[in-house]
Amino acid sequence: MKNRLRKRYRKYLDSMSQEERQRDSAQAVRLLASMEWIKKAGRVLLYHSIGTELNVLPLADFLWERGKEVYLPKVVGKHLLCLHYTADTRLATGAYGILEPDHRDALISEDIDAVLVPGLAFTRRGLRLGRGAGFFDRFLASTEAKRIGVCFSCQIAPWLPIDEWDMRMDAVVCPDEIIYTDRQERSFNDDPHMV
Image (cartoon, rainbow, N blue to C red; front, side, top):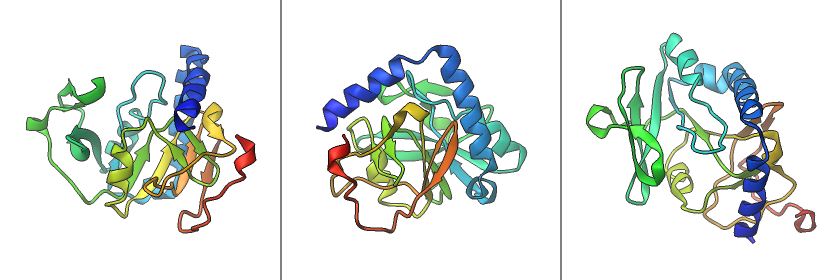
């Protein structure tokens, strides 16, 4: 079922024009910059978007202007490392074709305060459908950072199937709104008939 849903949400993303993606990404970044969790965070893990993902990298300028430390994920084996990212950081193509800080130029930090998490779909209760490799879920299970899912409005799902290792978000940000969730709530069973 998850693979069928991944195909569906990829289709939604593919139907968006480049102009829509740029406009909506800019609006989502404005909303992210307005969040108290982001304003209070000392270290924020962003991501370098691939393909049709919402682009959050412009948030780095906002964070740097306020003296915050910015990190990008690097895939190493089955895990994500948080690598320090500055305006001078060299990026190299890493696993899955994603641009990552060149490891020689990076510092590793495990004390991240907020994590921006990409996904193919999210529910209003903070459930996430990723690409299927589990990198973010494994990382999120090992941190107390605020988990902020980031997506376009067409990626908000009425329901998603979950597995025991799937990590919920504290909030989901799309261009139109910030959706705060209660990730401590253990009843994950959204209405299964709403797929």
